[in-house]
Length: 68
Image (cartoon, rainbow, N blue to C red; front, side, top):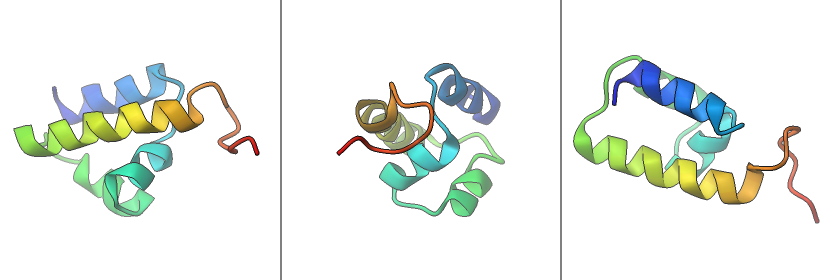
């Protein structure tokens, strides 16, 4: 999966890049920098795990706020 495909996938899942960055363990800026190039297999796996976790937390919430 290319960096652009990852960005599109994040959008299709209704997430923002900062949502995924939070669970990847990077700031939004550093995560965006990571996606300037196609990720290695290891990084792609870690990104996909972060997307799944972010979907659980932010998936149905377009505003990005967590319900209390």
